Image (cartoon, rainbow, N blue to C red; front, top):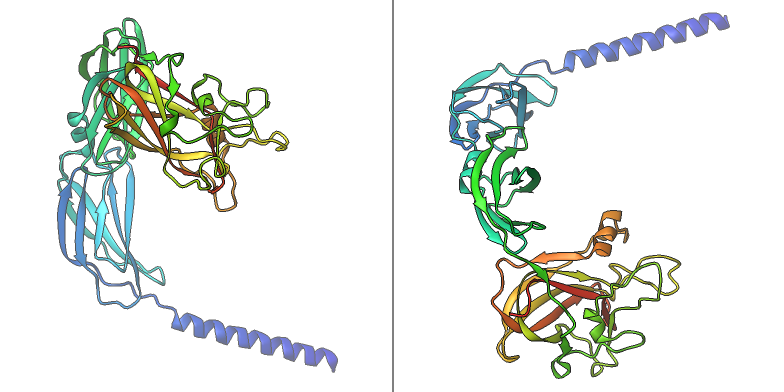
Length: 399
């Protein structure tokens, strides 16, 4: 009797599952959506913008475009149901490209394809290459270009100095870009350039001419003096304002170097409100183009932990120049940046950048000047103390 009940129960469960499965199959949507209509294509540099009208189906998920890129690979781009525009890109041709458009719904049904054909404009990588300008600069060259597509490009710089070739790779997606190549001797070099996009399209290597980098030197600090009447008081504890240019960079490993300034609220009139100025008299005229700034590194009782990017360290600042200590010319606004994530973690690359020193360049070589104002505009959060270790300038010394 018990076996008969079990068999009857199993049969009932089997029939119930079968009925549910059949019901589900009957309700499953297998109807493909309609196709896109009213298609219009606007060619772009290296692609095209496709405008269309979606079908009337109420369960559309997205539109998919399938085509062959200029590398001979089949690729696709998608656009959600919330828009009626789709961009295809990665093309490096002025011949026609065929694109098949599909509509997919929430049940993964695919519409019939609609094939279109259009001719893209010349790829933006050629426009970038044509726009590149090179100017000899201190210790290297300055390179500028325009990128109307605002898409990532990789600019390969081939520098031929006699029999030696150096290759540098610059990258950007800015519409207007300015970058420097440093560390070159003041010898004539031949520079050739090619440009690549993110999809692997690349131009031919083009000779851009001959350039002679200008002589660059480190600005000697032995003549520098503090203009105390116009500067913060950075003499607290082991810190001294003049340590900012003593050619000793504070390190993580030991407190023996202790080379930094410490500006406290108590030593500066009871407040430490930004901006905070350090004014230096070089006692000579110089021109500068780039410089390096170091943070304080050693952390007392830190157990070997670096002090870089901690709340008291300088973060952002402005540089001003003057010939008379009265009229000041803004050389630039600069920011070390904040690599900390939400939990306060800092990547190893950011620590290494701080150890090496944060290097900055001016847009152009400065005019000759005698006085420098280092104006701190923020630290990493402290309202009590601001610290910094060292500054080194590069350019033309003792003019």
